[in-house]
Each structure stands twice: as C-alpha cells, then as structure tokens.
Amino acid sequence: MTASPQPSSRWDVLRVPLVGAFLRWRYSRFALQLPLLLIAALCVYDGLTGRQLAPRNTATVAVWVHYRGLVALALAVAGNLFCAACPLMLTRGPTKLLKRFVPQLEFPKVLRNKYGVLGLTLLFLFSYEYFDLWASPWLTAWLILAYFAAALLTDALFPVGTFCKYVCPLGNFNFALSVASPTQISAIDQTVCQSCEGKYCLNGRVETATTRAPLHGFKSTHVLLELPMVSTMVNVSATRGAFPGCETDLFVPAIQSNTDCTLCLNCVRACPYDNVALTVRSPLTEATTLRPRADWAWFITVLAWAGLVNAFAMIPPFFAVAAWLSDLLGTRDEALLLLVIQGTGIGVGALLTWVAARGKLRDWVGVLFPLTLAVWGGHYLFHFVTGYNTLLPNAFSALERLGLPVTALALPGVVRGDGIFWIQAVISYAALVAAGWVAYRKAARGGRDARAVLLELLPMLLLIVFFNTLTLLIFSQPMQARGSLLQ
Ligand code: SF4
Ligand code: SF4
Image 1 (tube, rainbow, N blue to C red):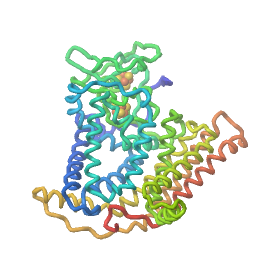
Image 2 (cartoon, helix red, strand yellow; image 1 turned 60 degrees about the vertical axis):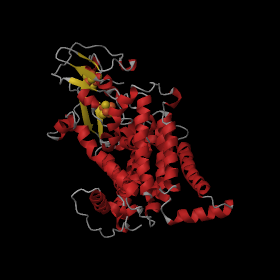
Image 3 (cartoon, rainbow, N blue to C red; image 1 turned 90 degrees about the vertical axis):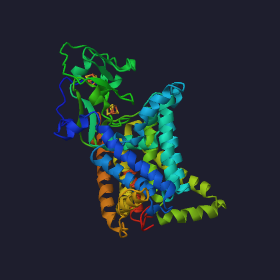
C-alpha cells in the first residue's frame, strides 16, 4: 500500500447533503433491501402460481428484463448498487441462528480464488440457454429460492462473506463491471488509519459508553500495516452500538479496486474517525492502473467473451451455425451443440486475448473493462427497452391474485427495439475509444519512445477493434426480444 501524506481531496458522495445522511444512516441498506426482498417474494409467488408465459409473469420480466438492465445502468453511472441492495444479505439473521447448530468450517484454501465462481458463471450461462430460464417463470422462481438457500447455507457453514466473494456469479459479475464504475470506497486520510488501533473498517466495532473494541477481535494480521504510528490521532464522537466490519475482508486504506466491494458501507459506519469516503473518480482510473491476480484476470476475460457469446445466441446467425454444426457432427443433441458453440466462442476469445497480451494477461486485462461493460450493457439495454413496461401490469395482477386492494393494469403496447441500435453503437464506440486509451496508457509506461509504444500497443489495438466489430455486428442483427410482449 502507498500511504498518501495528504487527506484525499476527491469529491465524496458521503458529504452530499441528504444523500450522504441517508447512506450513513444505520438502516439505509435495509431500506434498500426491503423493496427488493418484497419483489423477490412476489416473483417466487407469481413464478410458482401464475401464468407460465414469460412476458405475462412477474418472475421472468423482473429477473431477466428489469434486473439485468438496471444492474448495467447502475454500474455505469453510480456503482455496485445492486450488491448494496442485495436482499440475499437479509439471510444474515437466520445465518447467525444456523451457525449455532452447524459446524464452523474454514473455506478451503484451494477454493479461495475466482476460478470456482468462474466455473459457476459458465454453468449458469449454459443453463440459461439450455433450460430457457428466461422463458420459464417456474424455473426462475426456483432459481431465486435456490439462490437464497445457497447464500444461507454457505455463510452458515463458512465465514460470512464467503458467498459474496467466492460463490455468487451475480455478485462477481457486479464486482467485475464495477471496476469501470465512477465511485470507489477509500480512506480520507491515511495518517489517521496508521494510528487507528482497531482497524474497525475491517474488524467491526463495538462501542459502549466507556469502551471501544473490534467486534470479533482482529480478523487478520495483514491489517497491521508496517507503517509508523503517528501521534495525531483524530478522535470523533462515535455512535454507540455494534457495527460489523467488511465481510469481504477489504481494508479501507489499502483499497485500490472495487473488486469484492459490495458497497454495503459497513466500513463507513464502523470507522469511528469518520475517515471513509465514497469518492468519485474517472471510470478509467482502475482499468488503467489495475494489475489483478491471475484468477481475477481470467474471470474478467471470460466474462468479456461470454458477453458476446450470450448476445450471439439471440440472433439468427446463431441458429444457422447450430444447424451447420449439427450436420457436421451428425447430432441433434442440443446440450452438445450449445457446449461446442459457447466453449469455442469463449475459449477462442480468451486465447486471442492472452496472445494479444503476449501472455501478460494481468497487465493488459484492464483494456477489457470498457468493452465488457459495453457488450453486456448494450445487450441488456435492448431487453430493457423492449420489456420495460411489462413489470407493473404483471406485478399488479399478481398482487390482485394475492387479494390485495389493487386493480390490474391494462397490458401495454408492444415496444420494438429496432430504434436503439444507434445507442448501442454509441456505447460500443465510446468503449472502443476508452479501451484504446487504457491500452495506450499501459503501453506508454516507463517512458518508452513512440515506436516502442506502437509496437507494444498494436496487438491489443487489433484485439480491441476485433471485439468492437463483433459487438456491433451482433447488435445490428434482429435480436430475440426475450421476456417481452414481442416474444
Ligand atoms: S478507515 Fe477508519 S477504521 Fe479503517 S483503518 Fe482507517 S481510521 Fe481505522
Ligand atoms: S465494508 Fe467492505 S464491501 Fe462494504 S463498502 Fe466497505 S469496503 Fe466495500
């Protein structure tokens, strides 16, 4: 960690009137989670008991149309808001209870990386196509229930936070794309952290009228920084009570990435010195400077190409390729054909990236962030535009069936998504320019001369242009408006 001698002067969202007060409020997360929990419950109810027609069911339109579109939008304009409001974390109460009855295990060291969740993400993408999850309210409802059960069991058996960090494909998708988000948690003044006795942002804090202590003792020794203690401890009046620390083991003064940050703001409330900021930054800052671990670099690489393959499966050329492959292999086994297409698309893409990076994937993976956000964001935008008006009529109809005093709304008209190609094109070209800029900054490190920079840059530039061309080709095709009334 590089200690900054001066307090950070960057703009802090937590200092914005009203917004800051709300975010610091002890129950702000709960206030965000509760509506999503109620929507999840309604999805399960409608998915299991309502009409089994995707555009006419709350489960399918909320999960596969609205949730995904809003996630991409929130990541691009604000940050990882959906992890912040994740209703799965409301299982914390039952988790604590369950912990009394089940053995407490260490999460295996061999699994403490992103390869496991990378496998789960690929499994999810395969299942999404193979089982047509987007078309089945019933399966979608069971998926929601399975998700809650998995979060509960994982964090009951293992330390809390294990699910978010190593198991949840959605959370890790959000972590990956939040690298290109315009906000980040950081310490305001590193010197205050150096003299902070409890490292409360990580360990949590319990504060009484007379004592202050880490909530569960010190979680980890890596927080005891090899930095000189300073005598200018800043003490502010701290709120009484118990405040949990970071469940994903991030230590605020050492944070240089949004990776693994759920924006829960536990650290903000646990720090008794009011020394945590949610700073505004350039969306390219992290892409330019990040050099992640190899597992995280591979996760991001696969996610980028999976974005293209996922969108490709919804346009006519996919079916032409599947028919050709079926004749070539002499099989109509859908699982096999899907595996071959997805495996080839993602595998070849990842290999090309590795080659363009000349084996130094960790150094160059930052280039992929704008491209990944553009391909997933542009794709979700299409589904959101064609299905945005379906949620309320379906939700009201489900609430009416539940006996609540609401009147079912009329079905909306069909919205075609043809007109949004130009928005997708603008997003893609913006990503092209941003990725080119990141690549240039990486190539220009160490004061190389212009020729050396160009030679260093060229393979990655070719990859960026190739990726962007594929993205535009896919977006220019008629896409299945899954989950919408057009379907
Ligand atoms: S952010 Fe707050 S709790 Fe964390 S080390 Fe710094 S002063 Fe201590
Ligand atoms: S406690 Fe950890 S996960 Fe939550 S906002 Fe702070 S750094 Fe992010």
